[in-house]
Length: 192
Image 1: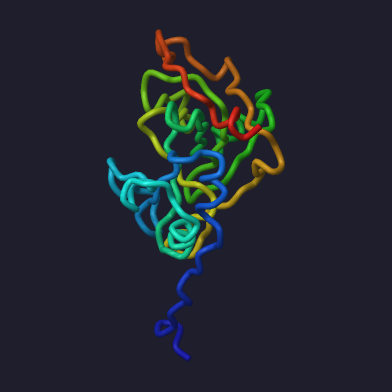
Image 2: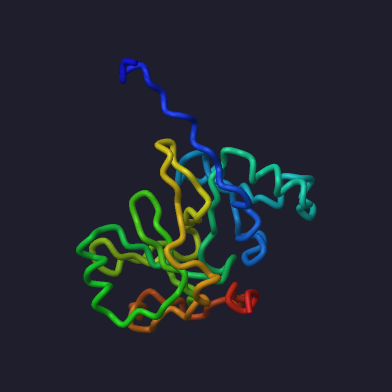
């Protein structure tokens, strides 16, 4: 067989990709473009797909079998802030810090840490080269997603391993905080 003629098998979607996040984050879970990190539509939310009503088990099962990737809206909608690390030097710096054990996962180009966090003034706050905080207006790709080359987004430490911790105050620049943050029920409170 000529290797140029070989087509790898189509990537297989993991099961129950939408179930777990929807149990914790409700309507903060969004579908992403198939095999991508891109948001499907800025006004699109999963619960609006079926007559803007409650999602039924069959609806979630449909999305679990689809090619869409799974995303999470960060910030006030979900009550979480994501710490995203995009380089080895940044990860090395972070490893030297006193970071609490919290759920974390690997995407195609980054490692993400899930925290309960305050409302930040910007969707993306750059802390240093390769380290940023994602808040309201940003989204992140969740485990269970798959890329066109077959690589999976996967948990390194799932919420079954660790509770979602509060974002350490040393990671929050004072200028990044909102003066009057809205009151939200954090996913951490819903999960416990």
